[in-house]
Length: 181
Ligand SMILES: [Zn+2]
Image (cartoon, rainbow, N blue to C red; front, side):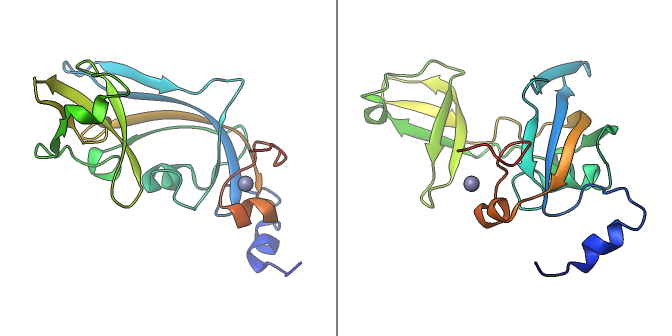
């Protein structure tokens, strides 16, 4: 194996902290701000099944990774990410009229339904149904979390160096690196 000088360096003080090419497992609680500035729970990880990801490959919001860099197993942190550094500001023009033919097989979705769509480049995204007319379904193409301030409480469950297989695949293979996919 090639000598990695960074790795040797971090062993000097014997505490490995979260950095690129690590697989991180963490529990998190995500709140956003409600209309009256109250905290609204968006989602939380299942303690039995922490969020596990390869750090530094663009799987996560960059600002999220920036906030957990340097933490280690057992550390807790709370931080806030503004919309511009989260899922972006809401674009009021990002609304599409989808012809009803698109829904022949799936059925017409109700207002508020989340539609899984993909763009011309094959990127998947979600749209929210705003209105259904006799001709079309009108959908908001903004990310459901666009324009929202994100309040995270995280606890690092585990982190380790990624395996060569994980680095080659560009994703984590579970907490222990041996989970199939
Ligand atoms: Zn893989």
